[in-house]
Length: 147
Image (cartoon, rainbow, N blue to C red; front, side, top):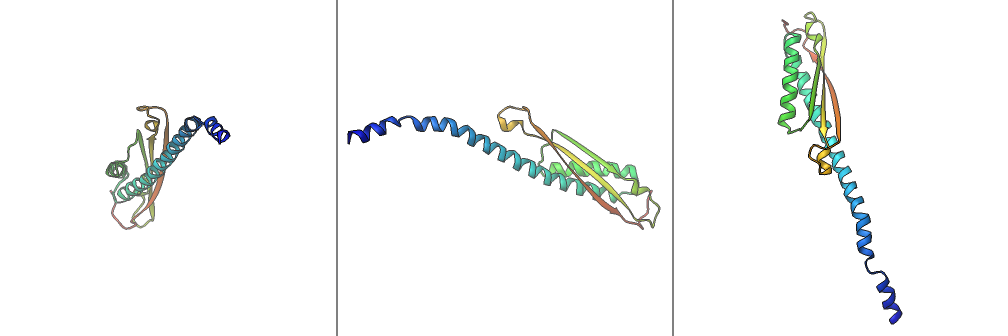
């Protein structure tokens, strides 16, 4: 019986050492998972913003108004979905709005959102950003009057 107790006493403190080694690894794995989920959701929200912006631009009558509508629709879409972007870029190819009536054309909008990831590492505004981008093309009504 005495030899069994000696063997059990030799392992005292091993759990604490194992926890010191394993817990940071588990925490790092959880943070990577959260960062991946955040980027995936940001990509989906950027897709929705690009679609809304392209649709809004395609409903306008001239390229200038199409550009403004795309900018506003993308900003509104990202804001309504509570998507936090440290930088946002919206570029719209609205040359299809200048096509003659009867000609099929389209408007393409690309939306980029820079997603901050530094807060995952407990550093306010710390390092780590990723940019997600999405583009969408919307057909312009061939017989709609243009300005």
